[in-house]
Length: 390
Image 1 (tube, rainbow, N blue to C red):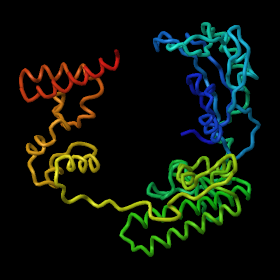
Image 2 (tube, rainbow, N blue to C red):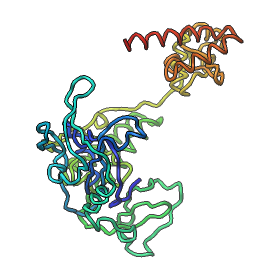
Image 3 (cartoon, helix red, strand yellow):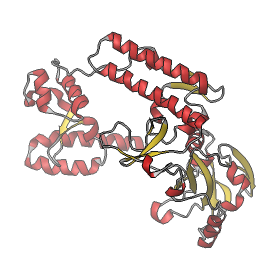
Image 4 (tube, one colour):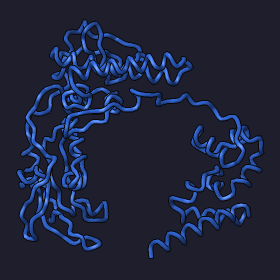
């Protein structure tokens, strides 16, 4: 987890910056500021990756409540090369010196023209690019959002309902949980009011979840939903949709922000949002264990749903049949893996490194003929793989 104003460096393929669809870049820019980027030649990672790939180093700073000047990097622009015009990220159009090579076009595996950065990585050129990154953007934690006073720090038990990194309102002051300490934040009054409104919506939706998953009557479920609608409508009337940029930034550090954003269907072009189904009807049902099923395949689904694996005692419980009977009925839906002896679904067993699995099955079949079915199934899978490769 990166604190507000924290800085990270990410190595990624050029498609993060150059892809025509800008949705990933727009999503990243909602929570972070691009400090700079360095494009590396396509041979940089050839020794380790075994292939040529043009890569970027992105330097990102997590957004905080402070307003900072930043460069746009969501759109693309054209640059001229000896092979013709190439579409690259607008950042590189403005800063061609941050590309440590020569952009060109090559033909991909299927003849598709693919931009790439040719050359070999020069460490002196890399040092020069790093020196051109903005300076003075990082400060030690004690310089950011200091507590108002030592007396305002409040020790909280580990069972406190505030998540680590989460925001809360205590006695009219917005706090953030840092480990086992509630730290008071010095924020503008307008920001505090915005956060309090979102905290009310968050608490209201939690109550809705609790009412739906408990044994409370339908009247209590409806009342919790009505409270959520009132809290949300009041917030939107004052501050706009939860997904509006100002609200996203205000609540960006709270781990429950994705929960709030999921409450809306937001259109960034119009700035309008519609409510998700949780405002209108029950969306959760308390899980009630299955008591009886008729077939082994139904029992398998129950077992996978409840335990994530093949659990013969649970399957026996819902069918009244022995594991041997269930195994016979499941047939090709389940296999016993000789490497460990656990039973696995066919989807899991007949995937992955099927060559190694076939070798293990063949060895086991020599000792126990029951594994011959594994051998036959694994051979069939590999024949299908070969057919697709032709």
